[in-house]
Length: 393
Image 1 (cartoon, rainbow, N blue to C red):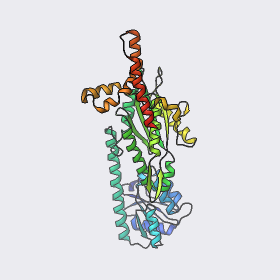
Image 2 (cartoon, one colour):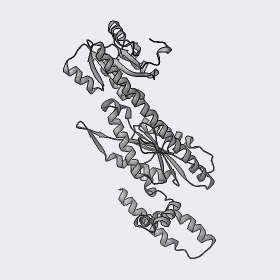
Image 3 (cartoon, rainbow, N blue to C red):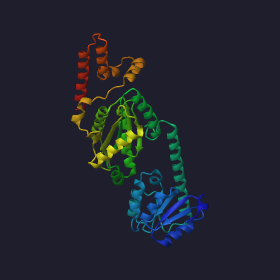
Image 4 (cartoon, one colour):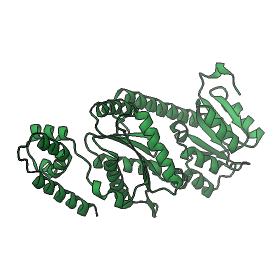
């Protein structure tokens, strides 16, 4: 093991249960690489978790505690991008084609025999560590860009920092005006099992699919960000918890109909969604609301997953039928009217707008009687609601 003065050299981790093999490889590469060594896959995995400076791994196949295939599965299934993108060179005395194919299928970047020459080994390691450095630089650039921008360039969703900043403004506005604001935390059920079974790249495709679906289902005034792999937060202003529950049930229903195919296997996505809403007269923070929603996700997954959990427990379709349509933003409708006129999209929203405004109109009529056609307006809103229920079924 090298001291800190060697840290200018790229660091590689050599994992082999043979001390002689490790010593042989170290002799070949020590002039150009800083080396760490471990005697089995489990010890190698623990080293990867605690040492972020490792840029490449050389691993044997047959080892005690955790073999090379098991180590590869953990590396490629890791949620840490610095680990799951590491170049992994499998080195083995067994050069049979089926061993090479199995190693590649498990995620090996390269495969070399223990009899490889010094120059070839150095050339391959230098190419792989250069690739690792490039990937790390790109990841750091992406993170810096995400910090400076409201949009994550990888997912196309809002960044976490923007979500908290914008949601804090919306929550403050809702508290001043005694308005509504809801938070949803959406998590893919059994995501770790998905990674273990199909690999990190397939799990990322599932994650991306959900991102795209949410982007098409949300309103313009809603904000969604990815909190962690397979976990998203949605902040919806002017929406109470019943409206959030209606959206959550529709989203879960849309996901239920999606089937992804990988190597002739059908993959279905299931979601658990936790809901939280701002409480009138109580000072709350965005982090507090997200935390409450996360707790409700955990409760739903503990009960078997594929559930929507609100303040009174599991939400069922019967409970949200009256709220099948979320309240609309009157400010947004007025902006649309000023910018685009009374187009077809705006006309479709009129029943929702009437339903949202009816309590205010009733108050106006009671304080300043002027013959507003409240009964007619209520029938229009009810007809729109019935049509929405029919379409939702």
